[in-house]
Each structure stands twice: as C-alpha cells, then as structure tokens.
Amino acid sequence: MVRIAINEDSRVLAEMAVQMWDSHTVDELEAEFVETLNDKQSAFFIKYINDLPVGFAQCGLRTDYVEGTESSPVGYLEGIFVKEEYRKNGYAKELLFACEIWAKESGCSEFASDCEIDNMDSFKFHMAMGFDEANRIICFKKIL
Image 1 (tube, rainbow, N blue to C red):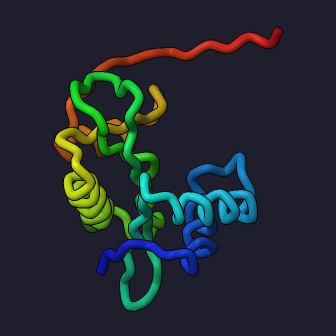
Image 2: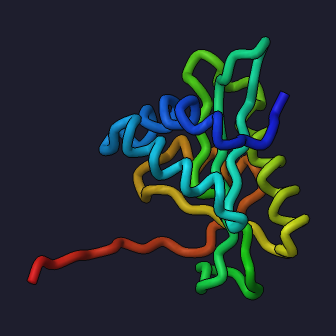
C-alpha cells in the first residue's frame, strides 16, 4: 500500500531519509519534514508492506525554471528511497506513480527530477521510469 504522509509520519520519513541524505541527522530531517508536510506545494508518499514502512517519495511543485520543461508549475521528484532489502520489487515505481498523480491533480502537465551525475543507479531508475535526460551540468561554488 502507498499512502500520502501526514504530520505523524515525520519521524518515520526522517529515519528512512537519513539513509539517503546522510549529511543530516534524523532530528534535522524530521523538523524539515514537519514544515514540508504542512506545505500545499509538496507531498510525501510512504510505501508499506504489512504495516512496515519500506520506502518513501517526496515531490513538489516548482514554479521557477525547471531544466528541459516548458510549463509551470512542474511536478518534481525531490527524493525517492526504498530500503535495500525491498528493492527491485517495483515499490519505487509505485511511489513515483503516486507523485505523478498528485502533480497532475495539482495542475501539472510535466514532471521532472534530477540526480547526481555519478549516481548510475538513480540514472538507470529514471530512464526505466520513462524520463528523458534534459541536460547535464556541473555546479561550482567559491567562497568569498
């Protein structure tokens, strides 16, 4: 079962998300997710197997320019995660589909995403899910 997350799910989401975004703590992510869960411009979906959360997806509406798109707002996959022992079962596809439905119901005609340039697993997932590669970039920063 995939369902939309509510405020009470913030800790469960953070405990999974820290495995993907490991530069943060569970507490930091939980605080961020509480805010995000109350924002109508974004949504989380959780995948359950026998009442056990095994994955999640975060999506949002972007109104700024999204690489390769022509409309606004654009549904955007902000993150997707499935616990390692549950991968290769189609659960990420289910989560993505829930995000796409939410985006369409929110007025979007396009859906986008990104991944790190060296994350081949994510790249392969996106291509298998019907995404088209829009561009490749390397970002730079400089401390002043």
